[in-house]
Length: 175
Image 1 (cartoon, rainbow, N blue to C red):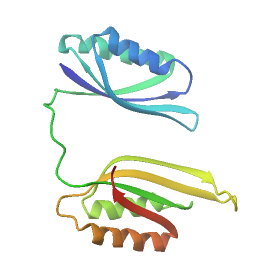
Image 2 (image 1 turned 135 degrees about the vertical axis):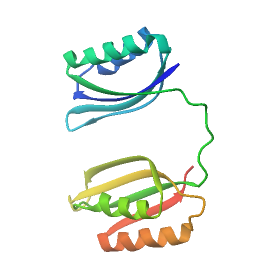
Image 3 (image 1 turned 90 degrees about the horizontal axis):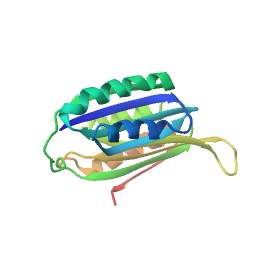
């Protein structure tokens, strides 16, 4: 078996997911996991699929042909890996909310990187504040802390950064 990790981007329209799914299934593959969304009028997604090794080359050609539909597909081919246990360390949920301004993501990403915290999943967005109408920035992430992390120290650093950026921050164990 061959694992494919695909990055997809194109003008959003109905049928894009079906076109990719048909190629995966048509080449004897299995859709394993994905994240897909609409961003700024574009369809963007990442996907991991498993295909029989002897059919992977045909699937790669068919995926490349999706460019005729306006869908750019980048593919990384990986040898299948045995199922691994998650790395050591605690999974935590991080939430940041505050008035939008440049630099919020970079400040928190820098702090997490310095603490060797891995961002496993993250979504961000903006919305209008209910009373003031100001644009609010929201980030939600699942992060994995190294086993050696002192959570209280990390939380204190996050709260100092939040105070400087005038945002609210929450770090809690993942449910």
